[in-house]
Image: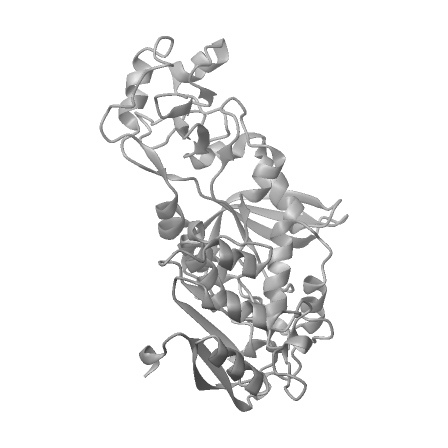
Length: 419
C-alpha cells in the first residue's frame, strides 16, 4: 500500500510517466474538460493539481472537474431521468432563479430531452460535489511536483497534517444544503411543472476500485448517484404510476418505496392497501406527503448512515447474537398478532409477513442482558405473556389511522422512567 496520499495529479496516476502525463504536469493542464485548458483548482496561477487522493488503498475524487471525464456522469444521469431511447442534450452552469427572480445559484449541468421537432419534453439537474479534504494536501503535491519521476513512491506517512477525505463535511456542509435549497426551488405545485418530482442528482463522491482506472466500474458509478425528491403533486395518476414502477435499480426502488409510504393510506404497504383519497381535512396527498420534511429526514439519516446496519433475517436470532451485551439496547415492535381468538390481531391485516411465535419472543427478550422495550396492542394474552416473563406493563394512549383513540402497551423490566 502506498505511503503517500496522492492518487492522480493533473489527470494521471502519479507513477504514470508517459509523455502525455508529463505534458499535463509540465503545463498544469486539465484533461477532464475544465472551463479553460489549465487546471484552476485553488489558485489559477498556482493550481493544486490533485484530482484524487488515496484512502486505505482506494481512490477518492476530490476535484469536481474530475467527474467530467468522457461525461459518463451525464450519460448515467440521462439514463436515470429519461426513458430508454430518448434524445437529450446538456447545458452547463445554468443560472437558477427563485420565484422572486433572485439568484439561487447555478446548476452544474442541466439535461434536456427533446422530441423530433426539437421541443423540450423533460429535464433534469445534475450537481457535482467532490469530497472535501482534512489535512494538508498541497505540501505532498508540491513535494511530488519538484521531481515527479523520482517521487512517485515517496513516503509521506510520518508527515504532519496527512490529508484524508472528509465525507461528513462534504455532505453536511455542502451537498445536503445544495440539495435542499436548489431542490426546493423546483416545486411542481408552485411552478406548474408537469411532473411528480424534480430530482436533483448529485455525483457526491466516487471511490475507485483501482487507482489506474480513470473511472469506477459501472455499478460503482451507479451507486454514486444520489437523488432527492424535491416536489409534490396532487396527481394521483402520476403518483400511482411512479409507485408501481418495475424499475429494479436500487435507487428507483428506494424512491418508489418512499412515495408509497407517503401516499398510501396510513403508510400501509400490505396487499389491498390503497392511495389516500381525501386525506386529513380534505388535504389529499398533502396530508401525508411533506416533501421538505422528507428531504430533511433523508439528510439527517445520511449524516449518520455509517451507524446503521439493516439485516434481512430472523430478528430473534439477531437478539440472541447480542443477548449477552449489557450495553446493547433492544426496541421490539412486532406485528400485533398476539391478541388471541377474541383480539383484533391488526398485524395480520397490515403486514404480509406477520406470523410470529410470541411466546418465543418474550422468552428470548427475558434473557437479554441489556435494556429492552417492547410495544404491543393492549390484549389480555399480551399482558399474561409479560407477567409470566417478569416484565412490567403500562398502557399509553394513541390514535390509529382512522384517528380513533385506543391504548397500546409499553413493556419493559422497569417503567419507572415513564412517570
